[in-house]
Image (cartoon, rainbow, N blue to C red; front, side, top):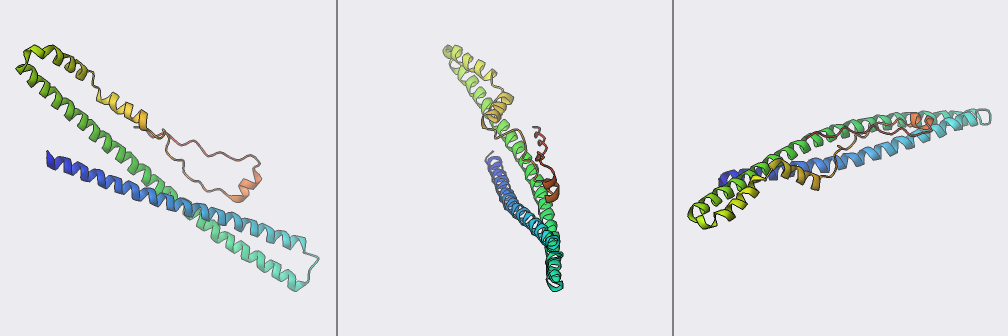
Length: 203
């Protein structure tokens, strides 16, 4: 019995460490993704400005100055391609981490729910056995013990778990994925497009 308790404690600690590590990794990758998005949008603006400078000064500058404008435009396009690729890669990486986090989160919830069911069942049965032993030795108090037994009969593991989940739950929806947002599509659409509502995690 003691070894079982130690094993469960060890598993609980391992799960907590895994969840903490994934949570930190997810937060770190989210920050990197948002920074990549910020840089991508800045590179889009730089490229737009370079294009506008070329068109605006097409007939107003010397050949050498025009070459400089085209060179700057080429550089901004190259920088945009690099930042676009980096942004998409970060979004892909973040989604993989989010899926791993969600999978481990579900596994952790299932483990702790099973552990709690076993704990409630063990103490309920232990108390029931103890009451039966006392009732055999103390017939005069049997009516009181009967009241306790009736209370124990109303003990519902499922309801207890559901009550705990209802009391402590942080929400019914998994975090929505961070999707790739093309800068130019966003500029053309006056009305922002809302991300799809994430699917609730089934228990």
